[in-house]
Image 1 (cartoon, rainbow, N blue to C red):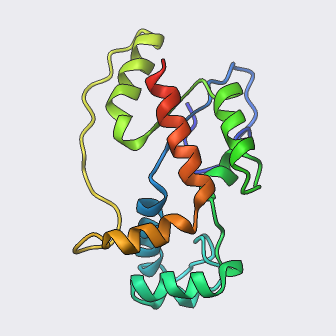
Image 2 (cartoon, rainbow, N blue to C red):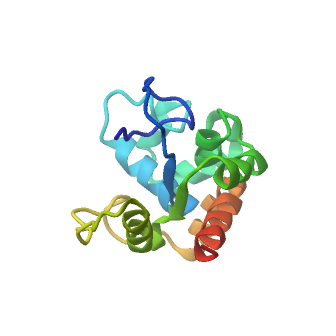
Length: 169
């Protein structure tokens, strides 16, 4: 078993058969989580924003800065992970359909574990929620969430596709 945040098909060599799986997140929730997480780090090179100092801004100001200068932000991160680095929602959707053994979005995580367990003949225990990610305090307003979602339209399409494909299983 190998688990990591990595691009599809990029993993250490093994003679064993691989079963590729993924869980995708709502793009706005993932954006807020990245912003909140990177604000706590000194080394911000792994964040989605290419100008690490922007992480010091309040969330609404951070969003506005990315809207003004979209080239400093790695849009559609989840598509990039499935489409070999390209922010290509169609290639990511094809990867879900043709390469992954199982995929789900975060709200379907319990069903994902049940389906994976049934297919593998393993009874996974119920998942424990140990922490929430994202910004401390109140969730962003609907308007701000919509603005964040608009920064990642490919990921939004990908999450809808993954949810629908999972429901069709």
